[in-house]
Image (tube, rainbow, N blue to C red):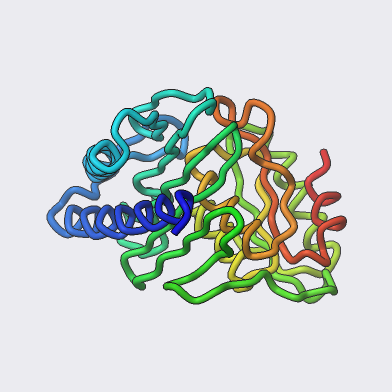
Length: 258
């Protein structure tokens, strides 16, 4: 087994345990949300789950850098860097919805190269390592074969880090082309659902590194068109993100233009 595959499997195992921990904590009252900022929620479970992941990574990969949503960390990406979101979709999590996940990605040389995303209910693990393909619960996944944008289902995530008018304009361009529009509250899940062909694309004008590091390698390994999210200053500043059916790549890129 290659080193990347070993790291992918470790990330998957830790993500599954972390998702189970978060679910237990919610059942015990740890899912009550407070606001970090406008529409930016955090719960007791977010912090506890991130600490659990950090402890497990430190045991398995001692001394390696970690960047997490709740506790920050290194962001230069020169060596192995674990990039994690303990609960992506916290607003859903806090309201009792199961549309949330744990995301653990690995960055080397500034590029996402391996990672895993785990849901607790339903029990799903998306995983990939560069050059090894992408899987859902161990079964290979591929992007949708869709060629007609008018038959596509596109999820558009929104962020208050860009003017809302830009999101509205992008959503309008999507619907003007006849595509179905979705927004589910978890960027990581939207990205990997595009990788699995459940939807035809996921687009967002700004997303943070911890939300998308694992999902980007999963999408690439599933054969998606991708916009090169993990480039430039993405680790520190985030970036716009787009993945989707490969035949729709040019159209999807145009949909994200200002």
